[in-house]
Figure 1 (spheres, rainbow, N blue to C red):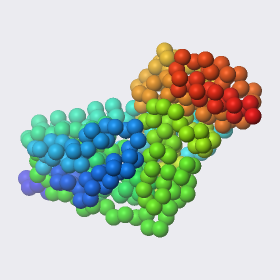
Figure 2 (cartoon, rainbow, N blue to C red):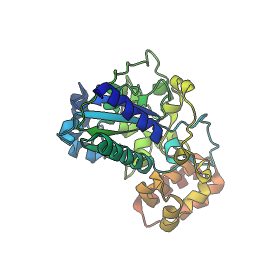
Figure 3 (cartoon, rainbow, N blue to C red):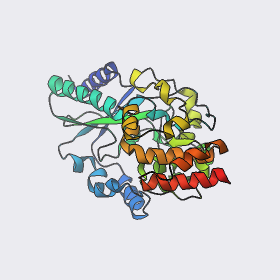
Length: 341
């Protein structure tokens, strides 16, 4: 069997296991990715994501991560939601990707199964990664032909639009690469226009203005000038993804793990604000939301409460002003001032 035939057998197995896309590229550095990362870090745009800086030497090079790597098998998982519609201000808007099970667990489990099959059937060695590993998966995915990095900085696929989870396998097998995907954004800047806080401009993202970064990665206080722009978004923001014209070619996911839990489709802000730590952990067991912890989560809920315009909710904000968590109590002060005004 030659390498091209082997590659197609591997692709077929990945699709059989349930991946939506399986593409191949080499393990050499992606041209320009290392310098782009260095510039990003030098400008401080990583904010509190210190792990990007501490792992930058490995992040910019697949072989720095694993010297034995020869090829990279990139996979995509469709989590398309179908239509994304706004929610009324008394409901919490949670990012589409976080409404189902934690995709890290789902994709990692499937990749490990894929890797075991590869080694046991065709030899060599393999290591799997999802986006928790120090790997620049978006440039690798673009070079493998899964899509291209759009102006919103995420991958865009001609088949699935902006709704793809990424993962991959490093392997010691030498496999012919697939053709890279060209950039098809053209002059479209709909995602930049849609961004509520102006975090996107000229094909670049400023994470320190991004609602997804601020509600998920940022641990402390948030600039009060930005808070009214959050609306009812309490975990992430999909505006730049949802507006992408390429989504018209996508299809809603059929993967059960990525389907939304009913209780996370449009949860009531008043009920979320009442969660203590134990109830928070119980509600978000198996969800990516659990990792930010109760205090940051309630901070985000209070932003939405403050933006609701519901003066009858003033007592909810006032009740959390004495919360033991400083990040909660300070946001409760802001929400109470905003509702009181």
